[in-house]
Image 1 (tube, rainbow, N blue to C red):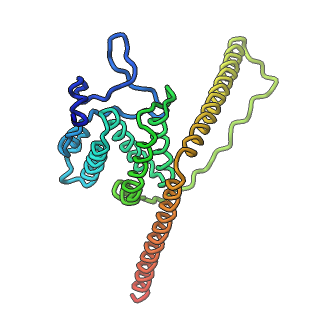
Image 2: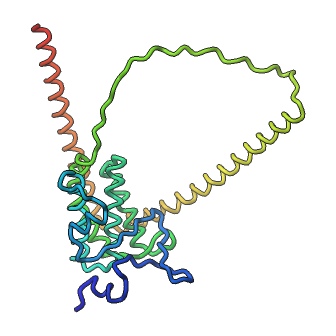
Length: 284
């Protein structure tokens, strides 16, 4: 049997992601999605050095975050190869993991919100409803990938958050109070406007009304899209087996419990340190 990936290269893919739809020139077009995924050129024989070059992570020896990212992407592609994915599925799978990680660490998401985002990306890559979703993965593959993420990335979610959270320092400075001046009085109602000024004011009012109408139309369209997305999400949640939802709930509960214990221990250490400093000052 021809290995996965070798068949794609024999057909002329050149390790590029197959896209759905072509233009007149034959150039491949990226599929439209609710959340657009990154097009990542991959092949099944990629080493850690190839991944470091692809994502420009050349400082892995000195930068722990770069080393973690290389391991994450390498293991993701290794699982795709093990699952027998072709180039399109492997690239999509890597793009999903990369998008989930970047959003989780960039926005400091909770594990629940991060998993909801992961489900959205899996949904738009498993249900064929153009242009917002494409059936790249089958239902069995979607279930298998969800199990993989639960047992790997989301199992160590707090470690990823800890490793990629930037240290924030706060400098407090005392500032003098700002005295507010009394506002200027309004013009008398009896003051008349010149014709040119009146025309300008009327034009401003007309522009404001037009802007409000445009905003109302955008809000109506956004509301309609939110309702459609809610229906799709409900269908997706109904398609996920009960055991997966149960495992997510248990993982969230355990994560919250561990986080609470860590916070309590940290507060206790800070309190003990503060009391020690106070006792030292009082002794002086």
